[in-house]
Each structure stands twice: as C-alpha cells, then as structure tokens.
Amino acid sequence: MIVQVLVEGLILGILLIGICAFGIRNGAVGMVHLYHQNVKDRCVELGLTTHEKISKNSKTFKAVCVPGYVIYILICVYGINGARDFLTGFWQMFVILSVMNVMDRLLVDGWWVGHTKAWIIPGTEELRPYITRQDKCKKWIIGTVGMAVISAILAGIAALVMR
Image (cartoon, rainbow, N blue to C red):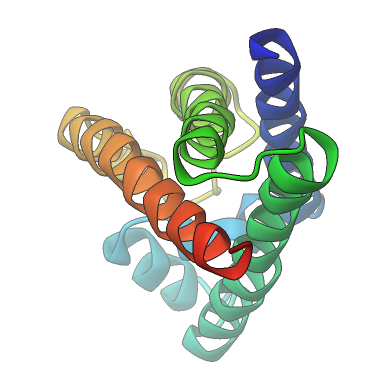
C-alpha cells in the first residue's frame, strides 16, 4: 500500500509541475502572483501585467488547484485505496501531500525556479533570488504542518461521513 500511496503523491507532484508549466507557457510573468510583492510591482511598472491581472491569475490558480488537489487525494485514498477510518485516511493523505510538497520544494522551488531561466522575468533579475532562504524555511515548515492539518481535517470529515 505504501508504494501505491507514494506513486499517488508522485502523480500529484507531476500535476503541480504541469500546472506551473502551463502557467509560465508564455513567460514567467504568467505566474508572477507566486512572487514577492516587489517583483509584482516591478512587472506592473514595466507594463508586463496589471495588478488586476495578477489578482485574477492568483484567484484562478487557487480555484483550480485547491479543489483539484482535494478531489484527487479523496479519490485516491477513499475511492481507489479503500480507506474507511480516520487513521488510514490521514496517513495516506499526509503521505500523498508530503510527496507533492517535497517535489514542490526541491524540484520546483529549488531547481526549476532557483537554477533555470524559465522563471526569470526580464527586468526583475536584480530582485533575485525570487525564493529566499527565509522563504524556503517558511515553505518547508508551513508546508509540512499544513499538509498534516489538511490531512487531519479531510480524514476527520470523511470519518464522520462514512459512519
């Protein structure tokens, strides 16, 4: 079962990478809503985008990703893997989300954003690194705790519904 859950986490991580690739398909400014405010402001100053478009992209990203991730893990854990109790649901969701979190931290933030040119927005180069050491620490902590909290909430709701 653990191998299956790890594979489901890898698939979710690949979906995240696909969403990011789609978001930057016409340049990294398409995902500038993930950057610090100074980068967003510079992009607006340069005429690359507007604050309204940044806000719209951010809302669209959250509206697609959050429900999509939740539906995916619920289908995997309860539909495919057959979890029926809190503990089974919790650990499976936590593993799936943690694998995605590790892929996001290492592959997306660490390598793709940090070491390739794909996420560089022309005219903002001096504002790099886009993801600072402090950002990385916060993302690891919040990501890990957040994945546990999300897993516990969803497993709790599912356990109540399945009674």
